[in-house]
Image (cartoon, rainbow, N blue to C red; front, side, top):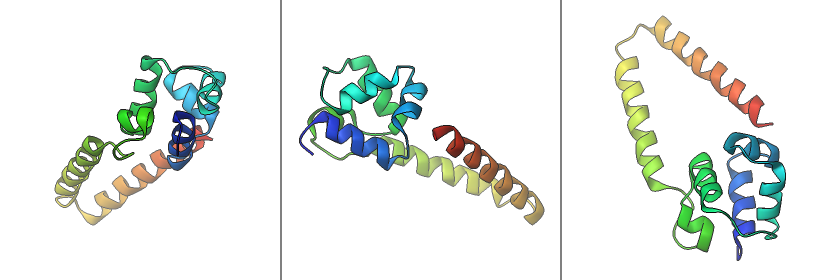
Length: 116
């Protein structure tokens, strides 16, 4: 992937976002995302920062192609959150655990629908 546009397209699709969904999430028009992906405009840092945070990708990778795509800090944070969830959930009854699991599944389904 030689260009910012190619990397952005790859990362966006890899994270399950349409151009419309990404644009809406970061508060820009779809045209901004389209133009960045087609390398028609120079990216503004505020947009790059928003994209990087939303997609949880390394800003340096997006801009230059150097380094890893994934933001390793996000991976560490995610592992910590999952560890905390497990620590709390193991003290709940099976019925309470199943309820929490259903809440998480419902939330995931809702967010997946918003991305479409």
